[in-house]
Length: 272
Image (cartoon, rainbow, N blue to C red; front, side, top):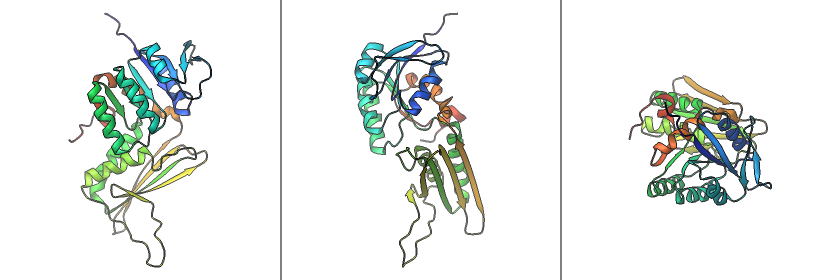
């Protein structure tokens, strides 16, 4: 039986915490080969791969790396503005993209979808966590039974996006299933309300504290004395496996933007 050609991958943002974890995960995955890396902090022209996989070209200049390595898929863990630059460079070369960067707006996602379709490439983004996908699914089932919903969104101090992509995914799933906003308690007349932000009708409280990684707690309630909570804890960047592996293998099969891996993780069919 003929061996399938391995998927060649370039990782941009390779020196960040998540980027390093992605390089580690993909370097030991059968059928996937990390062939290059880009990061604004690179000084040397090569990077050593973990697990004795040798050295690959590295550069601050992503376009240079894409031309030299000609990957099948670009994996991006940078920031929203850098992601759009990276996507344009990949689209120009017909390279599929997996975006791990969080904090992308709906406007940016629409822009990414248009660019991906125009270039005929697949772009995958959204949570790579099985736990987040499952929490969003369970919360969407529960949403119709409760009047109030709040999310405590806890992340490390360095995490810039607040709320996190995980909290937004869960809120969006609940809002879509419910079909109308949850109730919110008003503030007192003589004091400003301090009730967190409202996203898709769900109140979200984002905490950013040192040494915390990712914690999401969904709390739903009724006016008749009933609380129901769904919680999850991601303790390190290794949560990205198996999601990042699934995304990298799926990207070449897509055209346009696919947001969220719920169907791939859980066998769920998304409603249009």
